[in-house]
Length: 94
Image 1 (tube, rainbow, N blue to C red):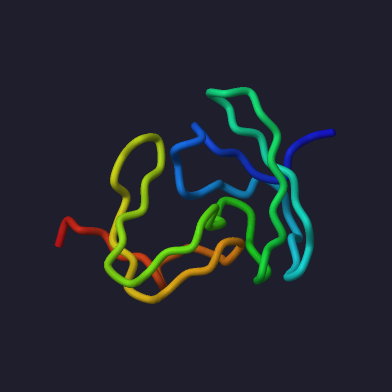
Image 2 (image 1 turned 60 degrees about the vertical axis):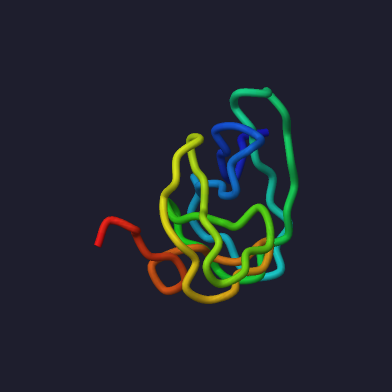
């Protein structure tokens, strides 16, 4: 079965959705590429293809990691399974 989302490595706090039509309260399956593992998560929001899903809870001020790289600062609390995007994470570049 093809995954619904991809995670580069287990240390990453987000996965990237790779299918259309994911709806709130749906259990989805992901592939953690580096470790070649399958994970499941229940999403709390509709999440569009190409957007991120939180793999853990985040508090305001936390750093989000993807590809072992800092991709931004949390500006509003995020629960595991929530849509993670510009409404709750901002770049630290400016």
